[in-house]
Image 1: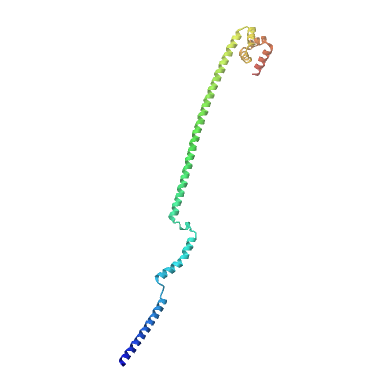
Image 2: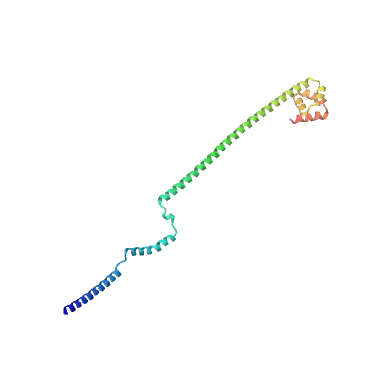
Length: 200
């Protein structure tokens, strides 16, 4: 009877001890959990929360393309601008060359026209000289004819001729032949011829 009672007391004491140990263990575990550092997931979450405002600020901030442009990009742009400038210079040179060619062609055309005009002028001058020589020969021939005629007949014929032609004939004659014919011509015509001869 005493053995059974002692066994029961021992069982109760053991249960109480186990309960106390369990409670202490639970308290220890809870305290350890509360004092443990954050888990990797929690740390990542916190980092993400800290980085979020920075990311938003970076998105909101204007992107400076010049600051982020690499040296290679800048060199390529400079080379492209240089090539474009070179192309423009070549085009200008081509236009200038075309203008020079047109000017040279125009200059040659003008020179040729001047040569043609000079040649034409010489031809005209030659024709004038020939005409004048023919006229002079004609006047000289008429002067000889009228000089062989009687002054009265010559004067009568000359009154019907052009004043310039009569003046040319009289000017070619000898002074005696001219005086004889003029004295027999109509007074006004003779005076006009004499005045024209004196003005030469």
